[in-house]
Amino acid sequence: MNDATHTDAAHSHGDTHGHSFTLRGYVIGFLLSVVLTAIPFWMVMTGSFDPQATAITIIAFAVLQILVHTVSFLHLNSSSEGGWTLMAYIFTAVIVLIVISGSLWIMFHLNANMMPMSGDGGFGS
Amino acid sequence: MSTTALSEDRNADPTFYLVEEDDHHHETGGGTILGFWIYLMSDALIFATLFATFGVLSTSYAGGPTPREIFELPLVALNTAILLVSSITFGFAMIAMQQGKLGGTQLWLVITALLGAAFVGIELFEFGSLIHEGATPQTSAFLSAFFTLVATHGLHVTFGIIWVGVMLVQLAQRGLHVENQRRLMCLSMFWHFLDVVWIGVFTFVYLLGVLR
Image (tube, rainbow over all chains, first blue to last red; front, side, top):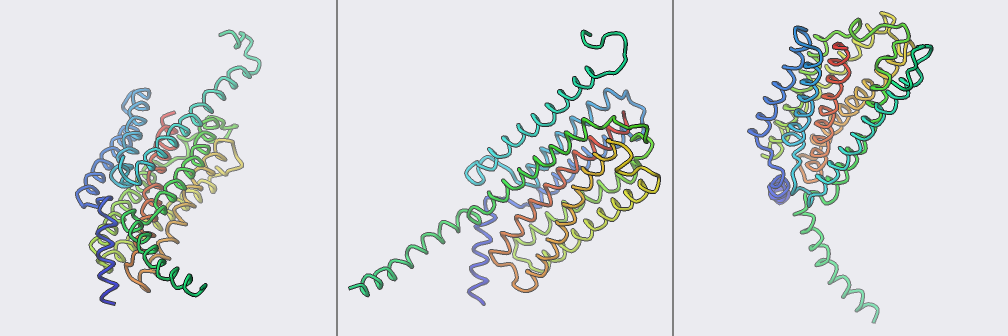
C-alpha cells in the first residue's frame, strides 16, 4: 500500500510534468473565455451595432476563444507527444476549414444558379 | 538444453519489461493520450460536417419560423456560462489529481457532472419548448440541421457525464493510481473539447442566427 502510493506520487509527478496543470493557467484561460463570450452576447443582445460589423467581431472572437481553450484547457503545445498532437490539430483545422467553407461556397453558387423564375438572367450576373 | 534457454529467457524478460516500463514512465501514458487526441480530431470532423450542413441550410425556413423568432438568447447565455464554469471546475479536478488529493478530485468531478447535467437539462427544456411552439425537426431544413447539430453536441455531453460517473466509481474503488490518472486526462480532454465545439454552436447557430 505504502509502496503503491509512493509509485503513484512519483508517476503523478512525471505524468503531469509536461502538461503543467497550474491554477494560474486555468484561471487566465477562464477569464479570457468569459470576456470573449460576454462581448459577443452583449453585442447581439443589445442589437445596437451594425450587423455586418457585429458578425465579423463575433466570428473573430469565436476563433480567438477556440485558440484560448486549446492552449489553456487542452494544453496543446509544440512539445507534447513529440509534436504530433499539434500536427494532428493543424491538419484537422485545415480539413474543417475546407469542409465548411467549401460546402458553403459550392452550395451558395448552386442556389444562385438554381434561382427559379427570376427572369433577369441570374447566370451571368 | 531447452530448460537453460527458458531460464535465460526468464532472466532476460525482467530487464526487457523494465525498459518498457521506464519508457512508459516518461511518455505520459504511452500512446493513449495521442490516440485519444486523434479520436477527438476525428470527432471534430463529424462536427465540421454538421456545421457545414447547418451553414448550407441555415436560411431554408420552408415557411417555418426564423431563428430570430424562436431562439431565446438569455437561455443560451445561461447554458454557455454553465458549460464554461464546468470547464474550470474540471480544471480544478485535474489540479487536485496532480496534487494527489483524492477527495478534492472527486468533489470537483461531482460539481462538473452536476453542471453538465444542468446544461443538458436546460437544452432539453429548450428543445421541449421549441417543439411545443411547433418548431419541430420536421418543420424545415433549417430546424432539421439545427436539431441534428445541437443534439449531437448534447449527446456528447451526456456521455461525458456518464463517463464522469464511471470515473467516480473507479476512483472510489481504487484511488488515484496511474491508470485512473490517464483515464482522467482523456476525460479532461473530452470535456474541454466539447466546450470548444459549443463555442462554434453559440456563435454560428445562435448569435449569427439571431443577427440574420
